[in-house]
Amino acid sequence: MERLPLLMDEIFLPLITKGAPEDLIKLATRYEEPGKPDLLPLDDAARSRAAKVFEGLSAEGFRALGVAWREHEPDRTGATMADERDLVFSRFVVFFDPPKASAGAAIAALGAKGVGVKILSGDNERVTQHVCTELGIPITGVLTGTEIEALSDEALAARLEETSLFCRVTPAQKNRIILGLKHRGHVVGFLGDGINDAPSLHNSDVGISVDSAVDVA
Image (tube, rainbow, N blue to C red; front, side, top):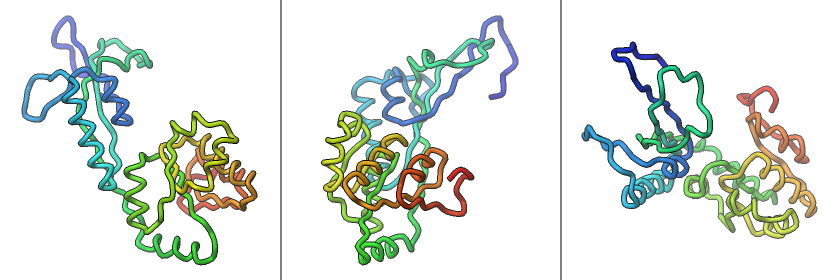
């Protein structure tokens, strides 16, 4: 971030952060309103309005990040977790990553061969359900990372057969799902392309990647 020249004895510069909108909204106390010069209090009504915008974007298949900021001293050289408080929520940054046109037919072909498909995603459930609908993937059950965190390995394994969609999952939780499926006698293939996918690619029976993946994958 480029520093502005000092025009007075004391000046504050913005510390900008981005992340999951629902987390930033919780950490913010004020927000920016387009067309209004003053910051507004992020009260319950404003939080509800922001949550509805986020839910609407997700339901349409858009991935969204929240952007927030707070002022800090000009001689600050770094940031810590303690700085993530009293933020000003600024805006949503929205991405659209449509599935490939051939993906639906490929998944249907797998089903015809007796291969079941389960989706393990870090995205929220609304975005993932939208993608599944686009591809014609039947949703037989949904588990979120928060719900998985509360389950023992035995309890998770008991839910795996009835669940086809796992959302907001961490890399470690993906690995737990794969090991649980193997423990139940399934031959498991895993498709991944990122650094965090490496443990799951290694622990699956068949690790599948793509030519644009990171080297470790």
